[in-house]
Length: 237
Image (cartoon, rainbow, N blue to C red; front, side):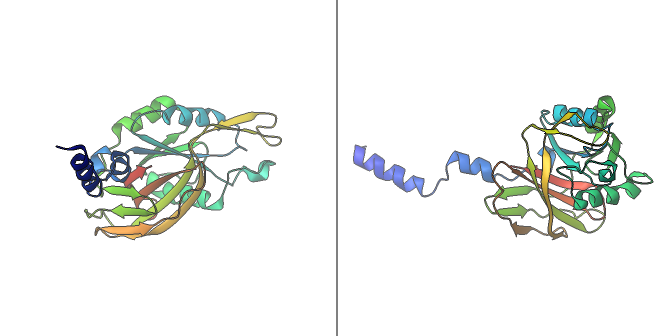
């Protein structure tokens, strides 16, 4: 085949075949391969939280784990306002407690797939909960630029919410000047900087528009039974 003909054929195929990098970025994540979601509820004003931060940092390197650090606000009265704390993160933890059999929120607490929890610095127990977490039975997720697509599947035991999470995967260190950790510099990783409910999911295929993530932040999507229920599906870019 002449060189000009080959070039013409390649040009034509280029209009039909997406680049491999784009295909990878837009590939749907089936439930069987979705990560185990580990949420740490922590506070810079809590003296027992630094070991739990270290545990989450270690777990974040595990393949198949989506680690998210939520800073709560109810220890701010001790003299140090958590630099990452938001009331909506506190409310997320509060919603979990009745279904997890807890009388109220505490730190440090780690929640695995919305179904089990433990004291956040107990690495051995956290490893056991991660290993025991059942494979997700919810929908496949596709993360595209500016858009999230959710496949059709059984909706679970009730209504479900679609959560958009923005988090920073980098290691950051925060000097604490007051409170129980005064004088210490605390490392953090996978810190959540944004949590928004995109809408509901009832089992039918659905799609949601999302704005680009701020510089340095990554995007995660959680499909979760309402009112602190199990996480049915999860994906991260």
